[in-house]
Image: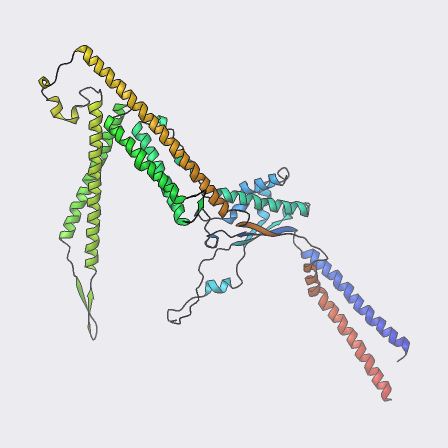
Length: 486
């Protein structure tokens, strides 16, 4: 074969390969840019606080990642990115996609089951509920294709930051304002103490719940159990002492109103007592007529099976219920007695007309007046004034004690709030609610996606050109072989 022919063959092969390469690149570009999606910014959000794997937030409630697309979060993010004048939360929401990151074998774990006949010592725990702790978040530019990549990334960053702030408020442990907001000046003294006691009992229960969640947590030398003890001391010392003084001295702002309240409570307790008493009689009748030690004999084809009934357990349950009802009756009677004594003390020290106090005891009205020393008008006036002055001093002291109690309560609440804030900062921060891997995705020639598309589209075209070149080379070699044979 001449040198000229050889050069011509090589040139042909080169042209074929070059043509295949050009055609492949053109086809790759058409396919890549024709089918490529919109540009997007993406990142990953990860939760690492205790309970995240179970879908439980630090405050014990179930958290929801869909809050990322709420108006509150998106509006705050647009304002922080200085884009609130261009877009609204409704414009952004359809193009914000949140997906949980699951293990590759998640489907196999969920669909697997354990046979009841499998008695092997090595058992695999199957999964029936799974809460992802990592989420893939993508924001597409379909709401405005002209937005720059930097702006899209900034907006996604601000969305995550706004959600983290929202999460820190929504799922943190805090004190409910509804528990603390009461205008005590609108209530009488017994109601004021009852309201404060109720507040302290709720706060004590909350502090103990937090202590059970994390018994080792402390801030500035005190833990949640210390807060609970301080609240309990206020109930057992200050409130109990003031309640005793209030009852003994019959202090009130409005005697008639307080009497009506006591009468209502006594009437309500009497209704409860009647119902509980009837229930106790029915329980006694049922227990007396109940038969124990029931035995059932079940006959089969070849044997007689003895089955012990559960009547003994049922009888014990009835006795326990009867005991509870009896204890409730005792408590109701105690409350009736307490309210009756309070009303008696109030009537004894009040200046109510005789027709209002007539129900407190007939013996008072029939008492022999000759046994009492007759007071002069001046002495009666002096005694009345002295009693009024004594009552004023007692009321002033009581109001001062209530003010001091509220001050003590507010001090403990302030320490409780500091402790909760410290706990929240430990559970919810940039490390426990973190985002990472922020990137901008857009169709580019120099990208992995373009190379993959090129391999799929240009690869087969270039392979066909290479096969054609191989055919030409084989034909050329056969010609050489025939020429050499002649």
